[in-house]
Image (cartoon, rainbow over all chains, first blue to last red):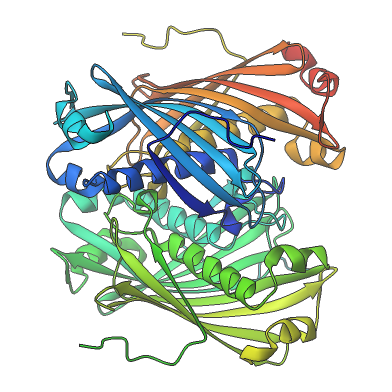
Length: 138
Length: 138
Length: 138
Length: 138
C-alpha cells in the first residue's frame, strides 16, 4: 500500500476543492486542474523568492508552451489534495513535472508535464533570468 | 401567457449555456451569471461602436460599483437564453438594468441592476466619455 | 489605524488571490468575488458541522435568491484578504452579510447581502433544517 | 498566405474571446482553452445528434483521460477563433485532434490531442455506445 511512490519533489502544497470547481458530473472540471497546476507554480515562484507580478514588472513574461496532462482519479466536492512540483531546465525551456494526489489516501489525481519559456518584449529569451530565479532548484 | 412582459430594451443577444458553467447542483453556478451580464455589456459596447479594449487604450477604465442580482429560474445543461439590457445615466453613474430569459419559453432567469462608473488614471470621471460613447442609447 | 471597524462577525477566513482570477484590467474579475463569497459560506457550513455535500445527500438544496454586492477596492495580483460573514434568519430566508477586507491594511474590498433559501425536491421549505444546522449562530 | 493548411476536419465552429477569459498578461488564460476545446466537443456531439445531457441520462459518462496541448499564438481581447475537431477511435479510446485558429488571419492558436473514454456505472466500457453515436464520423 505504498501511496505516493512517485519522484522526489521540490515543492508541495495542500489545497482543497472549492465547490464551484465541481461540474455537473460531480467531479472537478478538467480545465480547473490547469488552474491548480498554475497556482502551484506561482506559489513555488513565491517560495523561490520571486513572483509573477515582479517578473512582469521587470518585463519578463513566462509563457506556457505545452501541457501534457493525464487524468487519473477525479476529485470531488470537499476533497483535499497535495500538489507537487519538480523543475528542470532544458536550454531555453523549463520543464515542470507536476503531480496532484488526493489526500489523505494518496490516490494519484493528475500527472502533467508543463513546458514554460520566457519572453522579453515578446521575444523568446535564453531563459537565464528564470534560471537565476530558480537557481537553487536546478 | 405573455412570456416576456418586461421593460423595453435597447440591446439583446442570444447565448447558450456551456456545459462547464453548470455546477454539481446541475444548475449554472451563481457567479457565471455575472459573466453573462458582463459579456452582454461588452457586446453592447461593441454594437455602440466602442469596446473595452479601445476604452482601455484611451486610458478610460469603466469599473463596476454595484451589482444587485435576483436569481429567479436556474439555467441547466444545454439551455438557451436571451440576455437583455437597458441603460440610463445618473450623473457619473451608468445604470444597466439587465435581464436574462430562458428560451424558448421566456421564463425569467435573473434580473440585475448594475452600476458602472468611469475612471481615468484611477480617478472617478464625470462620465462624459462614456455618455458620448453611448449617446444614442441615453 | 484600525480600519476594520465594521460589524461583529461570526466566521472569518483568510484567502489569497490566485493569479488566474485577475483579469486584463489587472484586478480580480467581478464574478470571482461571488466565488469567494460562496467559498466562505461553504467553509462556514463546514465549521458549523454540515456541508454542501451532506445537505445535497439529504435532499436539501440551499439556493441563492439574491446577491447585492458593492465593489469598494479592487484586489490585485498576490494580495491577501479576510472574508467575514454574519448570518441571520428571516422566516424562510437566510441572510448573509458578507464583507471582504484587503490584508494587512484592512481596506474594504466588497460588501454583500446574500439571500439563501432552502429547497427540498425543488420546493421551497420553511428553512427549519438550515436553522437547525446553524442553530448556534442564529 | 493561407495559413490554415492543416488536416481535414469533421467539425468546426466559430467563437469569440469573452473579455473575462483574458488574464493579467493580456492573453486568454491557459486553462480557458480547455473550456474552448470541451465546448467544441460538446457542440460536435450535439451536431452528431447526441448530447452530454442525454448521455448522462443513459448512464454513460464520457471522461477525459489525457490532454496534450501546445500553445502557439495567444488570443487577446475581442479576437475571434475557429475551433476544429477530428475524431478517430482506437479500441476503447476516442482520440480528438483539436485545433484553434485565430480569425481572420488563420494563425494557429493551440493544437491538442484529447483522449476520451466512456464509463458506465464507474467502469470503463469498450466504447461501443460512443462509437454508435459518432458512427458517421468514424
